[in-house]
Image (cartoon, rainbow, N blue to C red; front, side, top):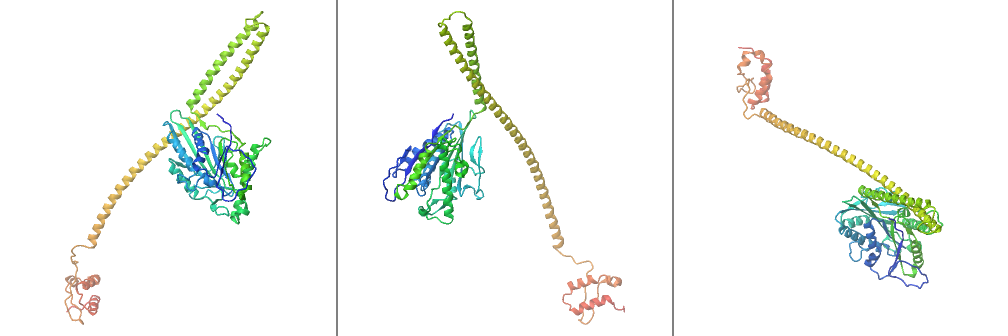
Length: 534
């Protein structure tokens, strides 16, 4: 069911650091937090009701606006997200969100996913991208999802600690720099998005709530911040995007405006649903009480005053199950049947009243005429209601058909996935058998190889060497005389001396190691030119 409501605007004043001059300006906000206000007080009023809206399925946005060094990051994040006392709206909202999830009905299943981006120099950068490649993402619009950042990294979390760790990792990648007014000035607009999806396990219906937590970069005056170089270019881009945001708010609050320039800036495009769309929005304007910043404080208050006039159209993001839609359709059909019966009865009364010649029991002619007019008016209203019910019944029937078709498609996909899984398991089993068979063959081959190695070792290096069958022996002779061959083989077959020369030399080198080089020459000469027998 649609619910219309204005943007809630609260003002938070940081502690003064210079003398304050009196002013005569009056503004009306939902609440003003003074310099002595605590982080808990701000959270209790600003963010705690928003968490309840998220659990009901609404979209919500909380963003801080103000000049640089006015305390926006202190309000949204705090000095440290782990400090229980000083942490800001974002970590406290996360804690409250998971507490609501833990206290919900056990028949509801929750999923929480987060994404973190910054708008730096009119480029959307993904702060959760580990490879730092998503530096220029685009903003898309979908009839079901609404406005979303395409290609952004989404991290699923299950507890408060995991979500805060993801936030801390993203904050390390954010662009900051020191200026003349702030040691850690934000040089970009950061948007921390939390999506809570709840599914009822019994009915199958789902609700989705999106929470946008925005920390805007502060508007800057160069003569105060002394920005130069890259910081000067950053300041120009920041002021330009904030000016585009102001133009969007002016167009939304001007009844004569025919166009809202959401596309003039990446910031206004991302916040399109938050400003005049499907969202419950809370704006925190941060101001300084110092007279040194009087002009910026006045501009900030005027910005908040204009934003308070914006009317949003939030609705519950719910998708009913097929059973619920069928029950609603049956209820509508029953109402239609009852109205048709009532219309037929009224038409019968009209015909009987007009067919009588005299007065009726309700009075004279004037009374009967008035009754007829009343009946006709009631018949017309019932006919209109019947047409509306028929239209609603047709729409629900069409939606049921679409959901049924989607269910059939998903069942087919699941069936195909099951078949593919079975086929994959079969292939895995076949491959497993082949691997086992190959392992067995490998083991056999290894055993055979070891046996062959052992045989080669025994053949190459035998344990006991036997002398060759044709070993020759030489009788020791003086070094100048040729040795006398004692081998009977050479004496019986002189023609084999030349063939056995190599063997004789090898044998000689093995058995006559004491011979001189002259003896070896004599042995060769004896085979080449044997002495004439005596």
